Structures are given as C-alpha cells and as structure tokens.
Length: 320
Length: 292
Image (cartoon, rainbow over all chains, first blue to last red; front, side, top):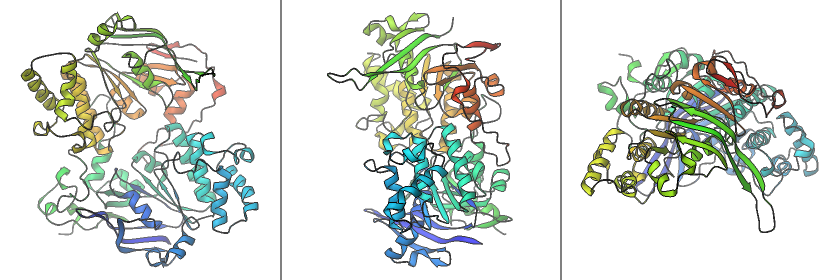
C-alpha cells in the first residue's frame, strides 16, 4: 500500500526576474515500510521536494500545483494548524547539518522533550524519561547523563543520532532524511546508515532518503528516483537502476564513478549542470547527452515505461 | 632520489591560550615520514582531524612545522630563508579544496591566474598575457571567459582556474587538497581526468589528499592512511586495498558505500583498544608498512 503518493508536484520560486521552477511535475510513491532513495546533484530540487512534503516552502517559493496524498488526505489542502499536527508527528525530517540543526542554548533532552510536548505525547515531566529512552534506542552511550548535554558537547555523529532520536520521538510513519550523512566521516556515515536501517525496522517506518551519493542509495534504498534539473528522470527498483539504468543521465553517473583499472581515464559526463531558470528547451539533459536525437531538443519527454515498475523520462523509451 | 622526502614531521597547535592561561597542546601531525617519487601520485587519506591537510600545508610551509625535516629535490625546505622559500615555491604548488572560497571574488579570472607570475616577476606584460591564455587552454577553459569574475563560473570551472593558477609557475610538484570533493558528482570525473592528463603532459608529481577512498584507489600509486595525526599504514594502492593490515584501515575500507545493491557488506567497527597508538610502522610485505 502507498503511504504517500506525490503527483505532479510543482514548486516555483518567484525571483525578481521571473518565476523559476525548482520542482517540475514530480510524481512518486512511497510504499509502507519502504525506503525510496531520491538522488541528484546540488540544485536538482531534491531538498525543495522534501520541504514541500513537510509544508515548509516559504515565500518567494510556492507550490504551483500537484497533490501529496498521505494516508488518504491531500497535505496541500490542509490548513496550517492541521499541517502542524502532521509535521514532526506523522512525517518528520532529519536535516543535513547536525551542527546547525540543534539549538546551542538548550540541552538535547529539552529539545527532544519539546517535540513530545508540542505534540502532547508526554508532559514536560515525563518528557525527560522518554528522551532518555530514545537516546538509548539510537545507541548513545550513557543516555541518562547525556540527556543533560548541550549540542557542543557532542561529536558530529552523536548529534546526528540526537536528530534521529528527535525525528522518531512522536513515532512518525514517514521520515525524510535529507543528506543525513554528508557532513560526516565515512566510518561514522556507515554507523548512521546502519542505525537508520535498524530504526526503520523497529519503528516500522517508511523512509525518504535524499542524497547525492550513489553508494549510499545502493546500500539503503528499495527503490530509487533520480532527479535532474527539477525533474525525476528515472524511477525504479534499486537493482534495476544499478544493473540496467535506462536514462542516459543515470547511466552517465554510474559510469563516471571511479572503478575499473586504476589510472584509467574516467567516463565523465560532458558539460555542466544547468542553472534553474536557464534550462535548455526539451529534455534538460540533452546538451550533455551522448544519445540525443531530434525530439530531445523540442519538447520535454514524458515518463515512458522502461521495465516492470520502472520509468524513464527519455525519448529512447517512447513508443513509436 | 625521491622528489619529496618528509621525515619525523611534527606540528603542535596550542589551543585556548589566554593572557593568564596556558593553552592545551594538540598534536595535529605526530612524527610523520614518507617519500614521494618523481612522477607518482601519492595519496594521503584519513578522516577529518586526522592531520592530512596540516601535513600538506607543512610541506609548503603554509603552516610552519614544529619539528622534522622536509626535503624537496634534496633541499631542506624548512631551513630556507623567506626569499629562498619563495623561489622554492615555484617548484611546489597547491590546489585547494573549496573552489568558492579559494578564488578572490573581486578579481577577474585572468588576474587570478596571472598573479603568481606577477609576484615572481616573470615575463613582460605581453608574455604574461600569452601565458595566461595558454594556461586557460591547458585546463580546458574557454579563452573568451578570461575577463569573467569567479561567480560567473561553475564549481568545476572554478577548480580549473585554481589549477591554472597552480600551474602558472610550471611547478614539478602539486599538492591537491580534496580537489573534487566540493564538486557535483557528474563534474568530478571531468576534473579527475584533467588531473591525470596534465600529470602525463607536464610530468607532474602529485600529493593527493582525500577522503574518497575509491577515487584515491583509482588514481594513486601509493597511499598513506592517517589516523589521529599518525600514519598507521603505507603501501601501494593494490596492496593496501587487497590486504589492509591496520585495524583502522580495515574499518575505513569496510565503511565505503559501494554502488552495487548486491555487494556483500561486512562492516568492521573500529575497536580503539585493539591496537597501540604508539606502535611504529613496520614492514609487513614488500613496499607495505603498517603500525601493527
């Protein structure tokens, strides 16, 4: 069953020289208990998608269309007080920067407790006890003492554990993790990914994992959506995406990774990521695409089926 | 003779020193020794705080080492006077990690690349002009963009400018401090290829500082692994990846996410009590040392 279905989501930023589409007609589903990996490079719209799901798009940004069906309600039709009950309680977000996402002047116990109190899951008095339990669950050693620590007393990896504990505090059914390990060292990253996987099982969560790292996706996701210039260009099961990628961008990304014979030239993708607002006509990837042909430069392609549960936004897969 | 010889390099930083307070001493680089042969790419890997960047900067004396010995073509870099050091730096240059903060936003690309030539008083104005255009071509930048400012370039193009600046003085040794980690994934491979091409064309020697182990494995002939200021393992890439000896190297290699959903995962967690911090490097195989 789908826990959340996003359909034709479009997010626009009104800039002085005109509107810029950051998320362009994006559709995807996350099934119950599933991890969807949303992959893309900086500026592709993956973080804006996360903020849209949380109802946190601020002016000059606005949602210009689409729907977000979560447990059979359209989140885009909820009032702000109704959305506030969903945010943090049913859908929660783990931010990228464990250094800046915590308030430096409150103890971590207070900050976890606040989430619980706001959503009336515990009184202030009970909150500390629940916070200790949560810190224990995310494997922070000596949680009873640590609950009184301030963020600066913790390492980056520990802070990310605290953020995960906060995200889990109200037992949400969907957790969005936006580059949860990008700021961390590789050994700590491995621990946090393992922790997320365990928490997903023990809290029966669904996870939207946003990252630029294909290795992280391969290790954690069940299905993958690849974003480029505001659009999802390919979507499918993780094995298919890595074994038989169908969009030239996905193929290019995978081929450009170091591997093969040492010292050999890498198979780079030519050109640069286009700036939003200055996208080329047609398929946004066509100037960099080795397989482009006539229709690519005219109209943006639609999602064409490329296999079971697998679509690619590429004319190579258009029915003739 | 190796091109670069580093022996017993130590760097202490003093933290929190105040008027009436003795600071605490932090040993960022702790008795580090290695050599880099002419024409090779030597990798220095480790996590944040391991001392890899400080080591790189000590080699150029951008940070003054506390003690130890750095020899470049046999010449003791640490004994040079300021003017001798400036002359020596013509042979050794650095490319920084962040292509955004390492270029002066108020200077045109042309002047950024020309600046080392001006500082070292090389060539006439026209000669410098021609040299800058040549460097632009060398790193794959469009010569019609010479008069642009850094913000008008993408991250990958900025890193090319940083590279052109480093190559302006025709150095033989270049320190690359995380040269691609701030770049978009689809652009990283372009810069890596450029670095490999330039190395071949200009017979450069690289010290490649990075935390991306897959990349290091791909382009480095030999690798040193740093942990808490010390080199804990040193060897050829092939040996180090095939048969890591130090517990830290093993944990590090097992943590790399592999872009293959079916790859077997055997995560090794580092147990800091399983090895001695004071163990000396010893030879475990031909060309392979580990502090075990």
